[in-house]
Amino acid sequence: MLTERFDKAFRFAHRLHRDQTRKGTPIPYISHLMTVAALVVEHGGNEDQAIAGLLHDAVEDQGGAETLAKIRTRFGDAVAAIVSDCTDAWTEPKPPWRARKEAYLAALPGKPAQSLLVSLADKTHNAEAILFDYRVLGDSLWDRFNGGADGTRWYYNALAEVFSDTMPGRLSDRLSRAVAGFSG
Image 1: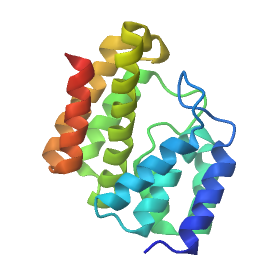
Image 2: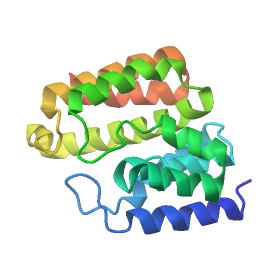
Image 3: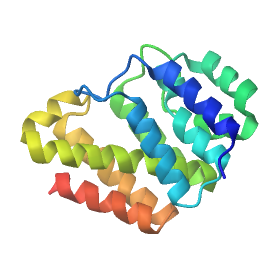
C-alpha cells in the first residue's frame, strides 16, 4: 500500500513541476508523473519506486544535484538512487541531445531492476503520448523534439530493444507496440 510518504512525494512533485506542461501541449506535466507512478505500481513496483516515478524528472528539470539532495533527505537513499538512475542530464544547459541519449542507452543494462522499472514506465508513457499525438498531428509532431523525427524514432527503437532484453514482459511489450506505431 502507498502511505503518507507517497502523498508527500506527490505534493513535492506537484510543487516542483507546477508550471510545466507536456512538450508542445497544454497538458499539466504532473499528469505524466502520475501516469509513470501508476504504471510502476501496476507492474509490481513498491512505494519507493512509485515515489521515484513521481520524481524521476525532478533532477533533470528542476534543479540538478541540489534537488537530488532534497529528494534524498525527504524520501531516502533508495528513492534518490532510482531518480539518479533515471536522470540523463545534471546541468543547464544540457549536453548535446544525441550524446546524452547514447550514454543513457549504454548505461541502462547495468541499472538495477528497481530503477529499470521506473525508466521503462517513463519511456512507455512518453512513447504512447508520442503515438497519440502522431496519429493526430502527423509529421508536424516531430518539430517538438530535439532529435527530430529520425533521432526520436532511433532513440525509442533503441529503448524498446534494451527494455525487451532487460525487462521482458507486459510493460516492455507495451513500449514496443507504441514505438512500432510511430516508427513504421
